[in-house]
Length: 538
Image (cartoon, rainbow, N blue to C red; front, top):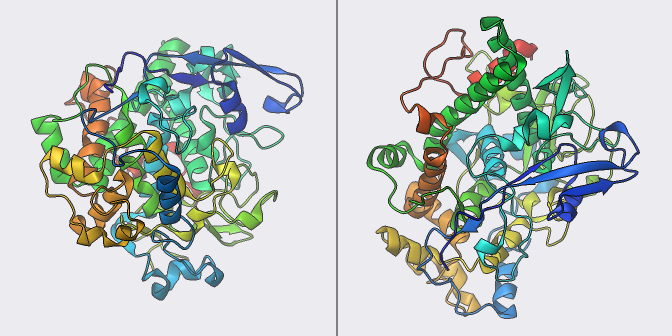
């Protein structure tokens, strides 16, 4: 079952389309949407889908699946492992409320906080995922050949999830000014930034998943604003350039600073700096295609480690809720259908629904929990381990791209291993030359009489490996190798990335502290976009 990276389909969609419409429209070149209020009109609107060339494939095509054969018994066991209250459930005390789940250490005993990651790391990882991969056609628990499934994103970390098809193919994403479309539409429906939305609150963005929750929506909004400020930056320095030249340069600056942060800030947080350095300096050993493609071992398992970092609740901002902090669960099924829900789901417009980024990224000791308070505003995410925050076992259907159950995210992840016939974590460990986890380290899986403690679903294995081998601070050797080689490989195979075109390039935009430093971190990105706490007076 060798991958064929020459046949990957890239979907560059028009903005403002909801998830279910997006799914129904796959395979069509034009879809008419009537009576939806999309883009502010009740007329039918033609949405164009631009298809590219690459499919999903396999990183280890020589390895057999972790199971001998797909069966209802196997699916039943996986559903049991991933069920609410099962072995993966952190059993957070949701009745304690969103504030206590953050500030009371006793409530984190079974779901520990990371000491090295801030809360925003989770959502940057989610944003990157949405920029690399989108599986629209395979079905959970039904074996599917990866080569038969289109990836609806370009696996290039090129921000096609933000830019769509560009001003010509996705004009609805861009503001028309002076006869040209070189800036994104933006909105301030929240007290500060928000995604541009239609009259029915559908986000006008190139990937509907970036409105799944309030934080990812705020992050996408920051990318829109970053590009728009890059347009101003380029225009001021090159007043004779035409609009197309300005757009291209602003897009390059946005992409390259984003890619720099991936390589120099987030990938080291995910896999550890030593492994990043090894892959960059000694080369990739396993992900070595001629043309970039998305391996299912990455998409369906290893990169889903971010799900274990999600907190049950967050402080979205410090003063947006009538002058008080806005604390909320990441998801609460009881909030379905509310105009301004008390959880952090996306798809809503209200004054308090914005992000105070000082809670999610470390802007330094100046930014505290409030006036006269010495407690730093920053919060952490959860450790990489085999404990998943309880709200993720009860997803709103609106947060699931297909809109179909099961609503337990761990169940969905585990069934995906049957879909892609993924190899076990132990076999990949042997393949990459590291000692596999022992059966005693996975003994909680032994009771299913399916040998899952010696042939373990890769996602579960990666979580346990991170916890047992790296104390939950980074991925372990199997998960880290897959994630590191694929992400660095995608950048190296992208002919327009900084790592490919100009590997010695250094960031050229001002930082949070002002001057150009040759480095660039997330706080610098948010400051340039104008959504950092200093520029907003938060």
